[in-house]
Length: 357
Image (tube, rainbow, N blue to C red; front, side, top):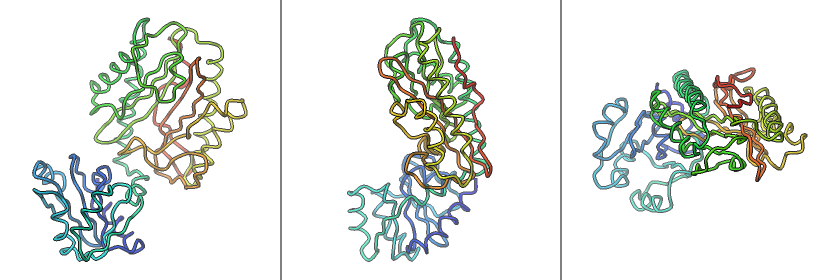
């Protein structure tokens, strides 16, 4: 990955933002701009240069992962080395990530940086991350491939008496066995009536005949996340939930069909939501249609009502409508979709139709 090119793209934004440099402290953004994978690192990007900062635990790792930027190791906290960096890079107005700096840290910066004006900046790096390059798409495809294989293995573990926690554990182990660095997020498994909770935490509830089984999970590969949901049935489910599954599948197809470069995020959401609303279940679909996926499991663009942001070609978004019926169960079907100029490419290969085990 060309981290230097990414920093140049960010640097090109500095004049419009009215700053001499941007201090990046959110770790996913630091990784995007430098390749650093440790738990503590910061990077300052100016018009023609960049400085990377970390503590002594990561000196050698930074030497290996950030070979193309000035590296500074500090002993007594990051703010102490920032004034010298501002002097070297001739920074009078320093932007900082408004969404990544605590009030306390901002106070420390003000105390240390006398003569340097601090300027809050929005999601500049996050916006750059929306559009994936070929290497990022390769990693997302690999993460999805592992997720697909894990889903097939998970179906084979469904037997009477298995609990939600046990199935979630088996999915996590299988992803690692297949080469993932780990799960992309806390795996969601919900049986029967628990599937009416959109984000249910697995418990000791055993599976019973007639239960729907909602599995929302994904693999993590070199920092990139997969996110997929499938709802299957253990034995014949209630007729109402079979009908709901058909409805959610139609809504998802409508949402995927609406994905294309230049589409408004709200329009993509509306395409799927109208299918559910027309069937009388609008109130049972309480969340947005989807979100971007990459170095974070939830990133932009966000497919939801009222969001007039344009979805760019090259983004990867989820399309995940759901209908949740308290006391009975629920259905969600979710795929990651690469946005193209004239449509969308769904990454998963797992069947979306209702599978009865």
